[in-house]
Amino acid sequence: MQARELVEHVRAARENGQALWIAGNGSRLAPPEEMQTLPLSGFSGIVEYDPGELAITVRCGTPLAELEATVAEAGQTLGFEAPGRDTGTVGGMLACGRSGPARPWLGDVRGAVLGVAMINGAGELLRFGGRVMKNVAGYDLSRLQCGAYGIFGPVLEVSLRTRPAPPVQRCLVRPCPLEKAVKEMADLQHRPWPIAGLAWWEGMLHLRLWGMASGVAEAAAAFGGEEEGEEFWQVLREERHPGQRDWRLLVPPAAELAELQGTWLIDWGGGRRWYQGDAPAEAVQAAARAVGGLAEPWPFTPFAGLSEDALALHHRLKAAFDPAGLFNPGLLPGEAR
Image (cartoon, rainbow, N blue to C red; front, side, top):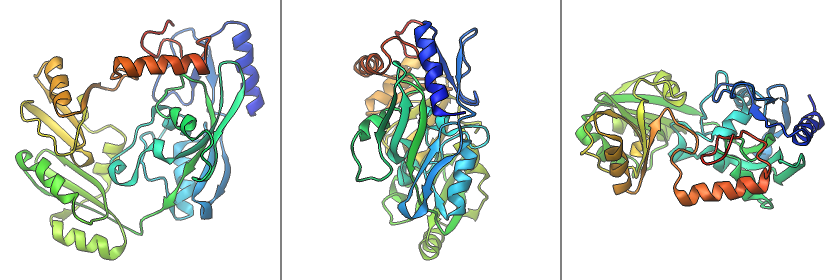
């Protein structure tokens, strides 16, 4: 499949007044019944990769596992650990914009985006950004596509920043009651440790260290506990942990939410939390707002947590990129399908 074929597909749909659902492997969002899809899974492959530049350009239909394996062979990593390693594509990774347990310390998907090539609603192939950090032309427009769920148009290629892979990785776990967990996690983050994951579940505090051997060994000795494998972190990354249910709260890491009684899974050193309990929706959302955060029902619904101002901005951007409402109609709240 070539880029020109996808451009022609979009132009034909526009001329015929036919809406398009942007589809990769379908691992995140299924298309509505009887809606024509723009299949992108066949548009795959590495376009350009020079490990010395710490940047890679890849087509959107490339499996995420292939991308990660490519940079790993060069002794590098993406860092942000997007979910979908088993079945997801690079386009789905960008469209969803979600990052895994290492996000507070190694960055997120949006922060790694250097440039994109995409098709807008007029059937034009657009390029924003570049392959190096100093090329800032169109930089913000590239990052707008992260977490947009395809509503502005299909991304065909994305350039991403890579980073050297850590030479040593260790995972540790030790008991810690919930009453102390948030405070202890906040204290640990002030230490000069090579942290790449800090989470709590069912009375146990989990620490993952990525870095040079000396720094990892020093932090591990100070933390104590027992060694564990990567399974806990991989399940957390793929959003398949039994604690990832009902409500996801994004809050300041040290925030106290004692008024919400129930079951907690705490990630990102306290910044991301899943809550299961009897508190009504209004109470959960009010508790998050009171500490400067937000609460979203889980599994996550795209754009469900947007404020009125943010939603209005999304509608203006949608009108600029896709004035005819060609792509993923109805996904943005307030838009007709």
